[in-house]
Image 1: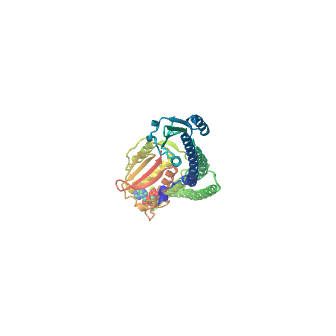
Image 2 (image 1 turned 30 degrees about the vertical axis):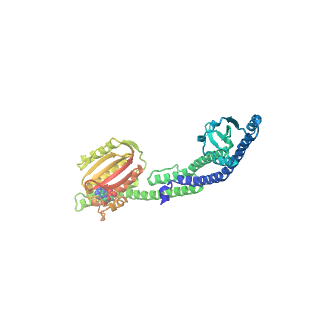
Image 3 (image 1 turned 90 degrees about the vertical axis):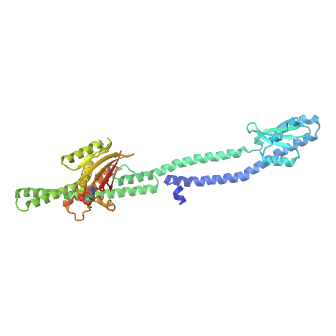
Length: 431
Ligand SMILES: Nc1ncnc2c1ncn2[C@@H]1O[C@H](COP(=O)(O)OP(=O)(O)O)[C@@H](O)[C@H]1O
Ligand SMILES: [Mg+2]
């Protein structure tokens, strides 16, 4: 549950997490132990030493005669690099008391009964200690380094810095390891959409290379299989054409004899079927994609139908340019419009633009296709009329061809219900 929601989805993110988490945790643990033990020890020792110094000068100031004071202060200042000043009694201000350096204050309190204040001055670089003596105020100033171990802070910065640099290096290397996997996914994706990536080469770690090689072998086998089948289909169709032509000739010579017209209709139908088989087997191979004004193309196709008095209308749309294999795409439109006219009696084309795509809608007013059959009709030779009665339509390749061509354009084709409860075919093309 938690893993599904919060863990990164990408391999890169996950690998990074696996890398960063232990590193950061180790560092935190180390830093904690270091602070807890080492830092405490160091501060305690520093505090104890300095508190001893302070107690010493207080003691001596109280006991030795006035005449020796100057020398005592000079010696003390030299030995401990602490500046010593004797101020008038009113210089002692209880409000200067702070809770800075608690260990030090604790030691100081133990060493003598005098009242004192400890605070930081000069931008926290200096410690000022004022002690109330019987006749004056003793003011000591020294650098905070006497009580704070700077090396600890430096150590932490080194740790963070070094870790960041190493992580950065790791991230760069990791990226390079992930790239071949991304490329493999892309190649598989493209192959699925019918876009060839001939320059795809296995690269990266051994395991990724193996997967890539397996993919290439699989791709070649699938291609070969498809080629064999379409070659066979187009071979059969071609071969059938010759006897069909001969039959047509003989029928023409028969003239208006009994049964000749039925035979003629059958031959015509067979020709039509063979035409469709050939369309399918031919695919759209070879044709180059060119930038085409989509609206003009649709208007052109619609006009062709209207000339034959078909109920096809164009509902309009924006001016959109896409790169198209024009004759293959025309064939798609013909297949879909023919379907709409045959099964749906009328047809409306609409062109519209969405964010990254343009959509062509082909609506009809027929019975539509039930939702559970909408995937099946795209399969080759699949028709909803189980009798396979050729009089009610084609051979069941129209939608198959349409999907092949649209996928090869990097687009998608789907079926929905039209506003008049008929079928709506949506062709989505990338802009
Ligand atoms: N506009 C439509 N309305 C209802 N059914 C349709 C429509 N278009 C296609 N179909 C169904 O989908 C099947 C497959 O269509 P298609 O691949 O073009 O083959 P064909 O038209 O050669 O039968 C058709 O046989 C028909 O049953
Ligand atoms: Mg059809």
